[in-house]
Length: 575
Image (cartoon, rainbow, N blue to C red; front, side, top):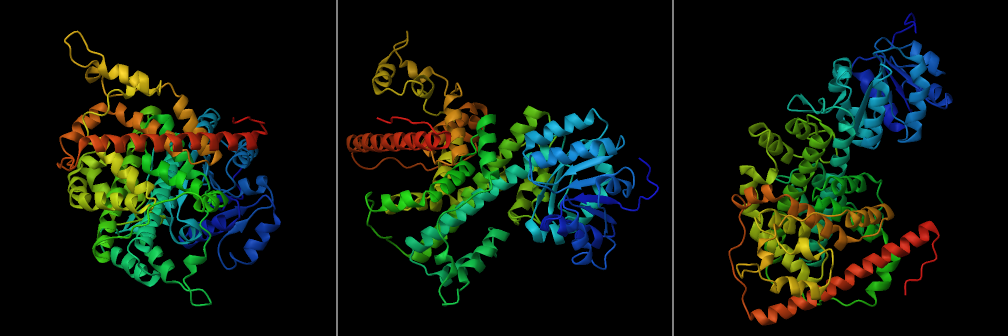
């Protein structure tokens, strides 16, 4: 098409608040932007109100919109993910020339971006799928941007993207991520880590309130102090502010928030991707399941009247326990980010993406929800060793966890004794102990498929030709047929907290990382104590724990069946 009337540097389709704010951000940085919306009345309204006095121009049709763009045309889509993106792409393609660029800045699934990139490449159109983080304020004043797709597009959008992004120490929180759907994959993992961070903060709050007995003003002060140290982050900062905020009756507002969390789905996507790639991203998985559990408000209210728990109180100094919580939070956060980057590395291998992990950490240091000083340490770790297989093996994080480990274990044990749920703290510690073990339960491979105590007994007493137990010679690297994984994915999709099966699948994923575990066992430390008390009594405790856990697992399984029956209109006979 002719560019005779072309005056705009970039065009944006989708005038919800995010789209409007991104346009105003680009305008502030000297770029002429052409705005379009499916309902054209919104274009006129935007130009008369929010964009009044700017250089922003509008269009009333896609043909007019395209004609106003300089070549190569740069078009940003900020519309609802899914069919709306495909619909606009299909309408735009006949109007574009080879070398023009379509950028999807919405919350699309990475598989869709991978597909769109390949499909448009064959038509000569350059596609970019870009994660945009920071919400409405970030879009207006500087988001974190994670563009990926056709690399030929990057030179044509780099100036715009890096100009409007957040800056940390003068560096833009934006760089080219990689090919295909990598930009949206990185954004998805970012959102999963965000779920994990928020769950850890919730558990810290719960422990301070219900174990240490702090009031909301005291907790606000604790979080404010934490924000001055290694936990310095946006989420810790706003938690402090939220806790001290009072309602009109001068009562803490947070006490009036219903304990039933929703979710947009991106954390769930991260957990599903981890299961599909065989990476034990346990903390994000538990964070998603915790939201699923919180959503079962009516069932929890009913259960609270029936199910018993411990009645003990915290022993020891509450102030000391709060410091233990801080260290447990820091160690668990390290594990969560380590797992997230393990998933990025696995996806990069599988999809042939050349990801720069240090640059990704820098992109997240500003403009986004998980922005924190901590990310600078991650960037440094990957700068020192770009082939680092797991952040836990970097010397900075080895030392950090060593300093926190005693407190971490104390918090998890105390929470269990007091009946306070800490799924994120607990799974992070379990992962750490599993990852630093060069040998994991090596009958896993032979028994979990059968799940029968009798077969377990037979396997354990079976001797090899040298009269040694055969089980000791089974490699502790379990495979899986996929059916357990399918169950965990179905649970995530239905919003049912089938945590035990999820952890069982992730345990197999961890066991499969044999070489990494052997390396980690030489670097990561753990406790050296021995069991105190009668071993026979402890074995009986194990029996009861196994029985109780098995009951929970079956209960979760039937909860999933009931949910599926409701959603699919099946008339199941559970008996």
